[in-house]
Length: 120
Image (cartoon, rainbow, N blue to C red; front, side):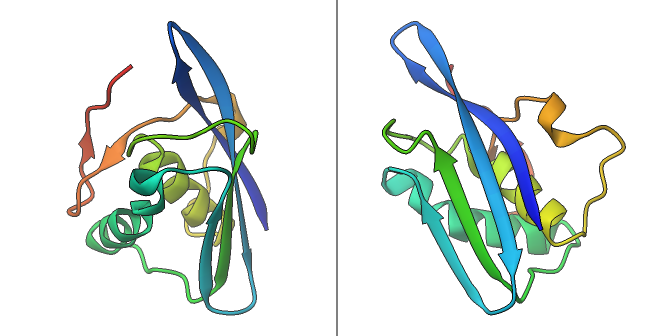
């Protein structure tokens, strides 16, 4: 299932909308694509722990996370929360009453699942 959530990248004083697409398919693998810096690539570890500590099960599926547009550098841990929500929704563990594409979601996740403040 394909799920889209939205975040933002700060460029100077402007914010650019970033689409976080998550697909969960048959298999067991995690891929994150879309010109992400080291902190964004490390989100896998924070999201995995936060999802597990929050009472959800980490899906045993092939998960692909695409941050677009691909030509814009994504920096920091602010994409943790939209990635986690996208994964849970794509694996049908989260069924939002209001469509996720109605919101811009940003937040760093602590290993215990709490949401930490971000810059911007």
